[in-house]
Length: 175
Image 1 (cartoon, rainbow, N blue to C red):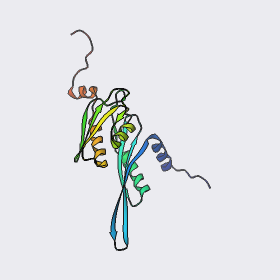
Image 2: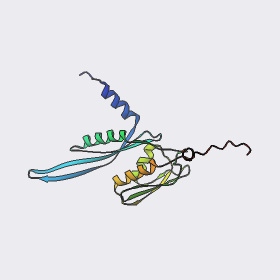
Image 3: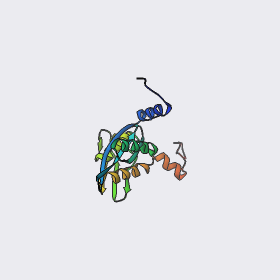
Image 4: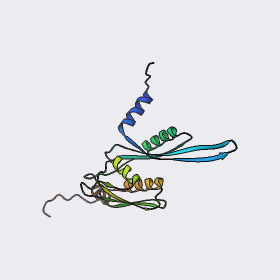
């Protein structure tokens, strides 16, 4: 049997090899009809390159593998860049989504990622090696994931803040 190759498959292979993926959970819902129950699945998938880029997607379908593929393609479209300085985030931040809040704090070298399942997965795939976090409010995995992404999206480095304020970099010379 000959192995066929086309541009779409090559592109998908390249993209999937570029990012590491982690499936956080699969949710099953059912609706009862006259002939029995019909199931649908929702999958939450995180993609990241462990180098400051991370994406999240939720895919829904009648079968689990299809839901996972949809979630991966959505995650590729929703990639964000996270400023990582010395393996941690630049400052404290609270991400908010619905009734979930997630506190993210920078940690010193050697601390590791001290976080719940969802924030840990997102931080590790973003390339953050030292982080403290606390989930506040609702612990729903989807809402916590969106809250973590809200926090990571709003992170700014000192250089970015200076540029936004229009301040000039100090040169170190006499004034």
